[in-house]
Length: 470
Length: 112
Image (cartoon, rainbow over all chains, first blue to last red; front, side):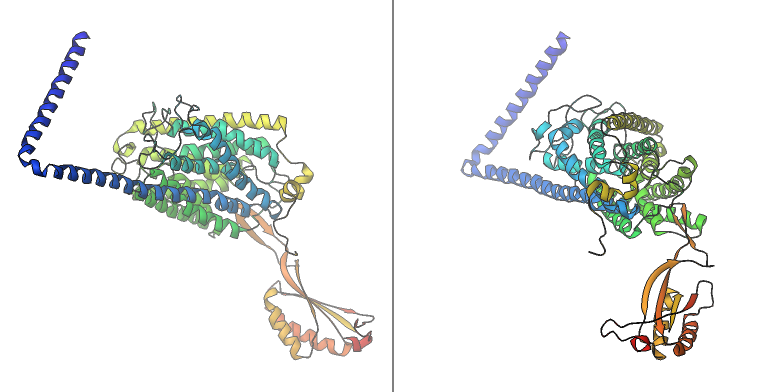
């Protein structure tokens, strides 16, 4: 031990000595040209300036893309998700449903600013971040090199905020048309704190248990939130659907979407916004972003064909709602894989997602009889789980050096994906059950029967979506 | 005076209106209605959930005519509204006791 220290010290002195000798030699060499002594300094200055300029240019490019991405992801919630879900409910609930998405844009933002970001991305233990970044302390213009070395930490923070907003919004599809607004607000606030923040920390945070990029114990590949966003929200949605029970009249009374047109616009906005979600998760404007962009688009296209094609075969007609639902299923499934897979793998993942999610919504839901009103579980829970596992199979180290899947002989990765997915399922089930129980006791979850028949728009908000005679 | 109520296919409204105008019927009331007779509804499928829609959109035309002109109007409607398929609709005739024009309180056939 002692001799090692001595050797280290000795080595250090040697290196220092050598360095000094070189500097002396240089000075001697430049001495004859003493007249032009200023020249190398000017060149050095120029090089230093150039280097700064290059770093600044890179930062400017990356920052521009990341700010646009953040805005795109916000657009997925409002109006994307609000329109998608709003169109799927009956017209007496259209405003109530849109409000469930919109209020999160405000509520989660405030929580994120106060302590949410710190819980998810602050340094802490394996499962949860600490309060170092609470109240935006130390989150400023300087980059946080652990996450993204070329963009301001504030850009990273606000980009991640948009994910925290949309995730609870997805759950709303399961309790649509029957949950009290007050209960929903409290549920969402608690869910963001108890389920989302810990899961985000485990997968993406410094020292997180599942973080593949920052040395987690069980390195899991989740590029843009397959487990963090879709498994947690989808599984929580199933728990909500089971806990709240069916809507009055389900499944005997017809409850068709009141406007597939609104849903169509919403789904198209989701597709576009998802480029910010997935390609933005590269956290820079380089080739990885391009690769994720292409994978996202390819998988979505294949999933549309998968869902609509399955419908065509089973019902004789491909529906518009089927096509757009397929798009969302594909987007969900490619989310964890987008930064790790080749374009051809993306096509396969998308096709699988389209067919599997179609069967989940059209067959499995009917067999079990739960009222997952807008198929939040069928699309996000099933699609997210499928995507997380397929990432472990198709991840290619040629696309991203940190991802090596089963097809490259790394069975361990698939196992890790399985563990991470199981953790996400467990956290979502337990967390959601506890929150539902608390809110049920304190406020009561469901609106009264009278209010449910009247609709959420009038009973919860005192307005109507369509005053056609006004 | 005879009141003619005709329930027809929405797609036939323009043809019927045009044909009636040609035989000199210049007043009518048109309502969008929903209903069904022997025509079965259709099914809609949303993510695998099937709904049967049995009330179908129809158009109801109402007009009151002097007795001597009602036959001609009925003939015209029959011809113009026909597609030959189930769901073409029906025509109902009934006697009307009187009619009064609000503007100048004319009554009887003069009010039509």
